[in-house]
Image (cartoon, rainbow, N blue to C red; front, side, top):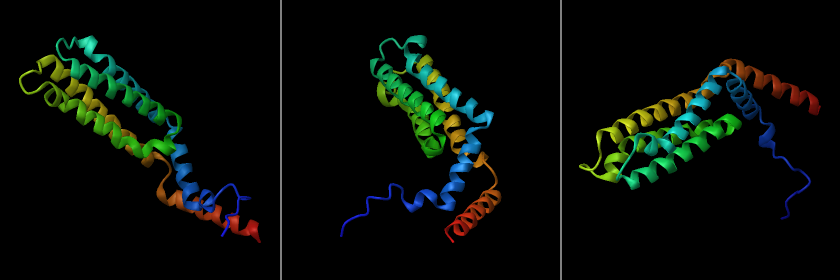
Length: 166
């Protein structure tokens, strides 16, 4: 059985629930708080990447590499939040995972006796901020219009679509 290649979009693209969800995320991303959260997440990632040299992680090459890689990953994730929130808002858990890793990395990489106070304090603070920003990013999807309003708008869109097909 051959597929019909004349239709470039699927029916799911015009589904009322999906349209309402996209509208909700668009509304949430237009709010000033989302820009603040995205910007802070980007700055946190950039600081995490350069923190081994700012705080002077002498003798902790593994921790330097870990902070550099996770910092770049968090910054890239934040750029995704800023550019296409409706597609990346579900990835807030990644920022939380990066934050948790950042907190435990001094012990996991350098060992229990190798970590010093400045590496632990730096990573604990930055990791806590990353976790908080990840939770805030996950909450951005809830900032859009109310569910009841979105569903009513979706029903209105569905009714308009049905009347257009008649």
